[in-house]
Length: 256
Image (cartoon, rainbow, N blue to C red; front, side, top):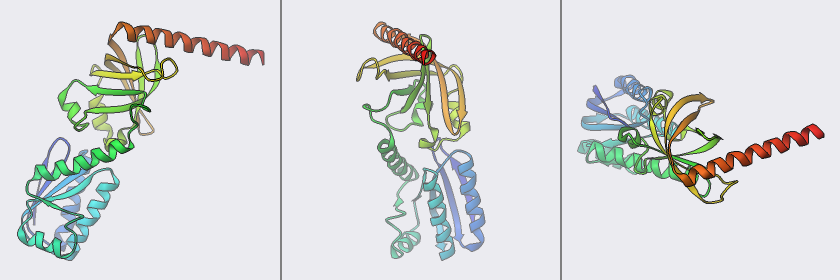
């Protein structure tokens, strides 16, 4: 049994050839583990050159699929031989593990399903306080068709904004997060100030100044580089309002 690993930007392909029997399971699981360690939780198995799969190997495939899905990813089959397709059909596994005609089709199906799950779990525009988008296309591609991330505002001042984002929603490891938010990275920010204006969103260009990872969450400091007049006015007023609120609270505590 031979396994060749190909790493695409968002997924890994394991091109397998030979008989997939018990002796090959350790190598298969090691290849899946290596893919996950490289930041790819989506794995496509190319089984075009596999002529036999025993029951223990099928169990290993199902176990790998379960672990990948638990990590926010998935596993799919591509270009499976007729023997493999027939075997999975007879076992009733073709719904759980469909076989696609091409590797790219299998990957796109998994990523589309992941995007649907992500959108269902991501706050909508009525809830999220901030959306960010990368100008760099390679970074934007990691966020799927929309290319947009949703975050929470932690701190806002006249110079910039600090927001908190959970990379685990995208199954990103620390290495990918550090690459995404490297100092100097340019972003488009769309944010609202709910205590100032209930539904208005303001847009600004910004540059990443720093990144901290705390408890699995990313805390990003971005400096404004293109804040429109209306947005600048809103930020100034919001900062002044919050300063006044904090001052009143401190005075009230002091007089208590």
